[in-house]
Length: 121
Image (cartoon, helix red, strand yellow):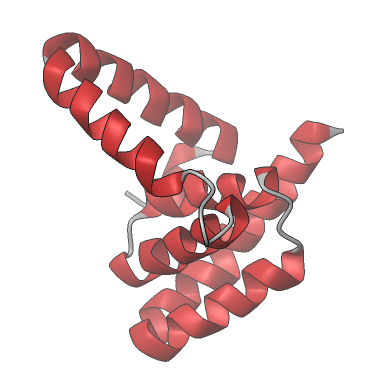
């Protein structure tokens, strides 16, 4: 599914949350365990939550997972990452994922940053 089909970052986030809610209803124990695991992974430790979100964004770019790219771009902004932090993460991801990671970074991530910043206003 390409980004333009979804129309907006906000719509993609809503769709993801709705899908996760439905999955949680059908698979409550699995969802509980998964959520517990990811909460543990992203809590503050030696690495800050900001650093962990940047790592997750880089992995999402390499994996070409558009929903995770959107989700972790938002996570980066929520944790106080600057646009420069995010752009450098795109560069590192492109070093491993080549053109595919770069193309998502220079399109989807930048569109998300713009839309999420507009939503804050």
